[in-house]
Length: 228
Image (cartoon, rainbow, N blue to C red; front, side, top):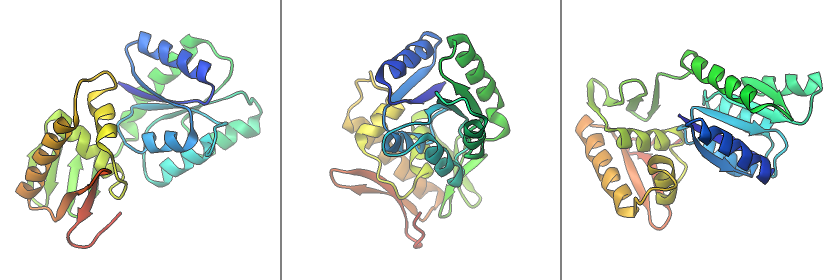
C-alpha cells in the first residue's frame, strides 16, 4: 500500500515516513505544496497524509484541486490548528479525515487503516481519455468492445498517464513511482514498457497514443483531436 506524505516540516515528515515504513507501507515524502499536488495527481497512492500549511500551495487548495479532477484518493489532513472552523474548512475542501498536531502514532495508523478500508466505497471504476478506458479492477485496457489485460507495471504506467493525460510525465517520475526509489531500473526499462503499451493501444484500436517529448517524457494524445 502506497502513502504520500506532504509535510514541509522536514523532521516531522521524516518521522511520519519512518512510522509508516515500520508498519509495511510504501511511502513517498514531499515538502512543497505544488510538488505534493503533482505527486498526488499520479493516481497511484492509496492515501495522502496532507499538511495544511505548505509553501506555494496549501493543503486546502490541493484537496480542492484533486476533488475537482475527480481524484478519489483518501486524504488525511494534518494541522496545528484545532479550531472548529479550520476542521470544517478541511473537510469541506474534500479531505476525508482531520488530525491536529501533536498526535500519537497509533492514532495516525488507525485513521489510515480506516480510510483505506473505506476506499473501495469511493474509488472510480475506470479512467478514460478519448476512446480508451482502463478498468481499475481488472487491469484491462479497452476501446469499444475490444480489450486486453495489462501487466502490473503496464497498468501502473497507464494509470499515471491517464490520471493527467496532458501532463508530461518524465522517465524519472515513472521509475520512482512504478519501480520505487531503491530500484535499479533505468530509462530503457521505461522505454520497453511504453513500447508494450503502444502495441496494446494499437491492438484495441484506440485513437489515443503515447507521445514522446524529447528529453521531457511522455503524455497522451488523441488522434481524433481530444486533449485533456
